[in-house]
Image (cartoon, rainbow, N blue to C red):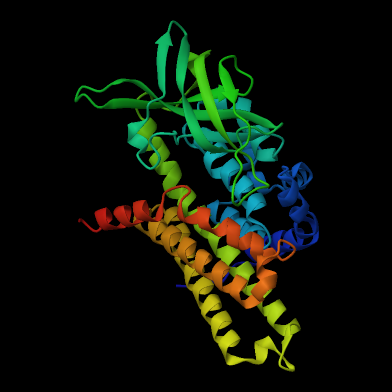
Length: 382
């Protein structure tokens, strides 16, 4: 088993790393302070082709694969997670459902804009009263002639309210199955559709330069042709999307964890205490060594999950392991990096303060740590 990257993969990683350090790092702190969306950074990412990385060229993509996306996410998150989650959600939750399940007409209509970064899309799954219980969806869509009439609400939806958001894919109850259970389907709702309203952005602990909103649908009408995939297959579709997305979130978490190592090494070489750099003391050395060990092992976990997915092998368990482990060590590394920085780690001028705030959501979003443990146990036959 060889986890060494190819020349093309190394070139991609270096390119995104340089972009993160030279473009993202100098300006992102201001966006965090002002809670503004970094449109200028997103535009440049679009020109680099990052939003089209795992899609074929025939749809306007870069002809890469999902692992290429993960490499880009890791490098972006080494510097900032708001930018990284914007890309992750735009690709794995926004464009990917249309690519996986859309008709030729839907792909032709939406993918060129989404894959160029000209437009963003959201994935309306989570609801205020359901959280991890996605099967408890309350939003409903009723077919009235040649239109779906949607009523309900969604919570914590990324990329749903920017000036360049083009659509949100919504999960809704569209009927009842023969066994009495809910029939869930997914429907494309373009931005600006009457009856579709976007609440003001949340006041968040972290990811404050990313876009997150609650959505409301009040007799919102869209064409029947906006059904995404097969009617009644919505639950299976979003499970597939979430399985893939967990690998991407793991990559993002590894990036944050590695960023904590980067900043800690830098600070430990510069900060003097008792006449020596604090990095000369074994207590600090051991902390940083443990942080590097955690980032390295989490990286191997997401590499393995991605390799299985791309090989067409079962990967649900490995994706859950990667997401669970990477999010856990991201929180650990953020805490230790803040401790190494001491009082300065509590100051917003230092990146580790941002890392610390951004890390916790990684144990919650796209499946909580508890849900990942459930998936792993069930896959083991328990």
